[in-house]
Length: 416
Figure 1 (cartoon, helix red, strand yellow):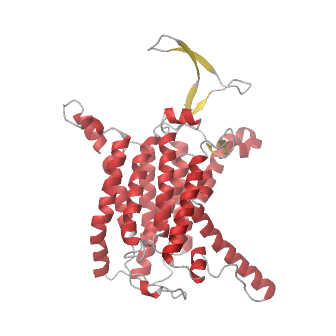
Figure 2 (tube, one colour):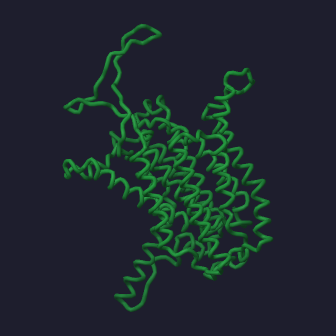
Figure 3 (cartoon, one colour):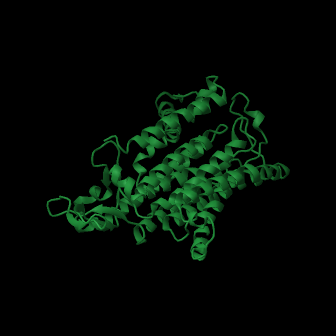
């Protein structure tokens, strides 16, 4: 919105108007506004939730201090959604396909989570929205994302053109400033199913390689494989974030760390100079996502003001499903989804701990007639609670691990 305001006022001599189109300025404005919304309006929303007695029904899992959280306002994810959507609408370019896709993702998963929380709180059904409907919603979003990336002509990556031997094509260009003739690679913006893969020299992976055996059918079959991958990624990360949201501040802080890392990756991927220097895939117009992720970071950090131990409000599924889905879709869009197991390592471990626990319990029950457990309780943060670790210590250590994983993720830009 403010970008369009600049286009209207660009011909007038207004001090400071030249800052409006800059991504850095608009990102800074987005993060400040999102922090303002979560900290100032967040407090008012908490009071409203308290007056409406929209409190969390805590199941007794035998954890120390757990029942003290009974009645803590939930559905606080509404604060996060507002703090993401409003700054994005104000400061991002709304004609950018990637911004529109992220806004759809935020609203779509936020609505699914809201319905789940509504059923739990107002219908007094602790099970909430049936799991199959959550999965259906996540799959539907995956199809929307995949279809957009496939159909939209605005979704392209810049690639080197090659000859029949696979060598990069070059051309002679005269430098307008010096008059010297220089040689440069020939580049072209194309639709592609390529993504980034870490730790190898040519750090690109093409989903088309998986269907190379299909001959002429490979041209459309690669997009089918790509769509399936996107659906699996969105479903896995969204549910993993939901599982991680079990103790005060854990999912919020972890999401903020992952979001900041993805913001850096989006910025360098959308800047032709940095992309060339780092020898990474350049994605035209992707830099605009820096504004969105700035709002995301501000929203999660601001929410921590009230969600840190002891929490004054829980985000509920309204927030957790949306946070995980946002990180997944964002990673897919900037072609860094293969980095998710590393960047979102906390989410992955939380998810795996549940899978391992349930699978082992069922297996041992069939084999020995009595189910056995690998962990004292899953997800794994409850295992540490059972071992006597205080909540703040568990959360802080998980954050530290998350920061280490984030640093390694950024380092993969040069570690090949």
